[in-house]
Length: 332
Image 1 (cartoon, rainbow, N blue to C red):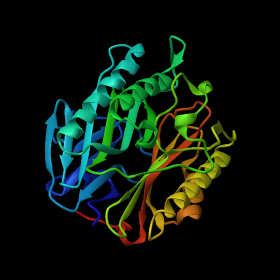
Image 2: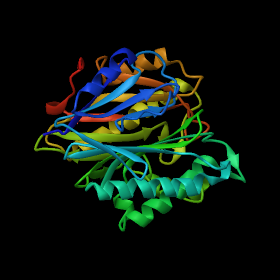
Image 3: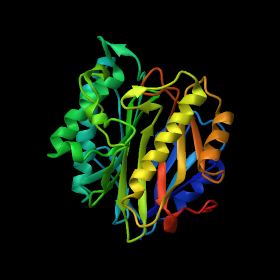
Image 4: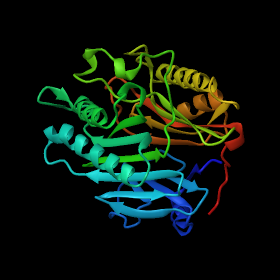
């Protein structure tokens, strides 16, 4: 049985979900307000571009919540949602701050009985800015690799799915999904594993898998898709925004097809989150994505910076088997 579902909703109805004891997470997008006291609420400071403004993770069972060494969490006996925010003392402190954040995240997950991270989201400002000759995204990658290497013995085959996105607000924000048992690491046949990127992309390769496939039952599968962009092999492709989008969609299709080799029922996108730079028109992008995956696939567009300067769009999401395809019009 699938332990949770995810859906998008507008700001007017988002907080009503806080009255449901099955709620695992409520992600608010846009300008952050005062720090919430409910551990299930996580703020993501990225402008939303029309449509949904919140994301709801609804569990199959009531959730328990708490805070452990600054890590906020909610779990329902099958999955764990957790998040934290740390402030940077200086622009050159991101590497060490990333190590500290991951160590606290992993320690909390282990203490709560969920030692296997499936998916991690990372947000921090000035992602493409250089500090002392090293781009901040690359400094983050060095810190992340160090933390993961200390946590995992077989690192290359135990990499969680991930995204790293640039914001305009201070602070390193992480949130994650963890389980009691691991999922399957899925790689894209059109791309080089990020773990094996050449040194031209930084002193330490990005340490994430293209997706994680998790079997929750005989025919209940989730595919947690990492941030996916216009990259073939290891090189960025195209200057035109729509050409980048088309290449990104090809990568998503290839990734889902690769995961389908391990499932008994085909996977389909249940929702997609789209990060775009200012020079990409979300109206055109919506139509193009709808042609690829169907007009009923929920989409959330956010204005953001991408980990490579030349990339204009990145898409992440959740694909599910037919039997667990999410309901479109959930109401609290």
